[in-house]
Image 1 (spheres, helix red, strand yellow):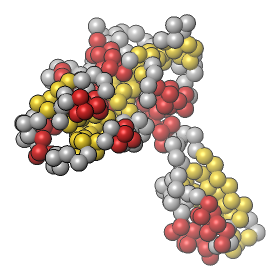
Image 2 (cartoon, rainbow, N blue to C red; image 1 turned 60 degrees about the horizontal axis):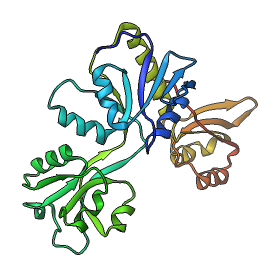
Image 3 (tube, rainbow, N blue to C red; image 1 turned 90 degrees about the vertical axis):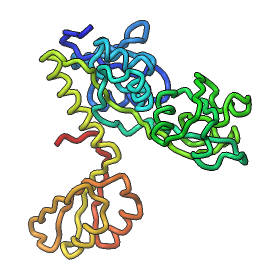
Length: 297
């Protein structure tokens, strides 16, 4: 089914590690919603953009069938299902979103005989991501058996079901708790914005372009700081070298004060108290630091 609706629909994880960050990003992009009674649908109030709240595993399929035009999903889910689709039309990744970072990693028991990936040959590897795991093994020319488990993958070696595991890792605490350690990274994942493989209607296409521009603006402001100050003109070169700026600062002269300048700079999140104290030492005053909510090019 290919949609001809004039409202844009976006599929987002209902609950889980990407849910709150996904909805937060949509709100930072200026979208306001009214929640349905069953809490499975958010109706866009200020733009014709609605949100479907679903299981993350269902998002690629909803895009394929045309129930929605965009989705926010983990790259691990997207790539696992892409490999299973075997070349049939499948959602495409538009951009990474900078949250939900994790990695699909191979891990083995501490103190065991497996030290290198070559040692996996002929062994069993338990995973919830059989397509990604099998594809990686082929790329490494390693002949190993993939054992599919849908939960509690990390205890598979202790149960004797597998010699190693391939599972999502964030901090590594779960691996350590189960006396496992990583030996290889199969995939680096994060939340990504994805689009349906079907060409949208003209009206929906314009909405998608507008929505993506807003997402880009919201993301460009993440971690940005706007610094404003006044300082002696003689300190300008040192100030420029000191600041973790994203682009060249704007510098203005001050009426009646030829030896002073006003400076405005867009800085990265690394701008900290040490920078501000060094600026004061250089003679800067009236320092003002603002968090940037969004930026439009």
